Image (tube, rainbow, N blue to C red; front, side, top):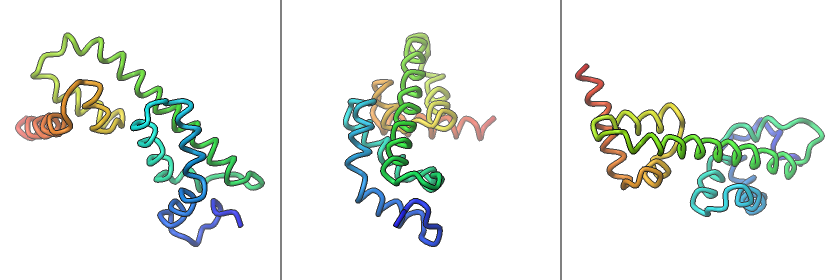
Length: 142
């Protein structure tokens, strides 16, 4: 039975069964591209929460589809990290007043998680959440 092409099951149920069956394999693929365990785990979660797994072509096995999707997700994630690293060079010039704007941009426009932003900017997760809150409050005042 090809789990990826069943449309009568909910996405959550399908994702859980796919994770149970292919999670370790997908994690191994992701680790080859992103050798940091915490970041690789985040990509793995993103992969199995993505509806892209349901869009596989007929005739392709579930395993091959998951390998392809894991590779694509890992490469996208790696590209986002590279973009963030280039932003870090400009961060030295960023003052604390514009930090909430930068964090908001990274989180909501570039799709990075708060954990990754905190690690890359050398902040705690709480500080990044406060910065987003500050940005939203300043936006309301405008």
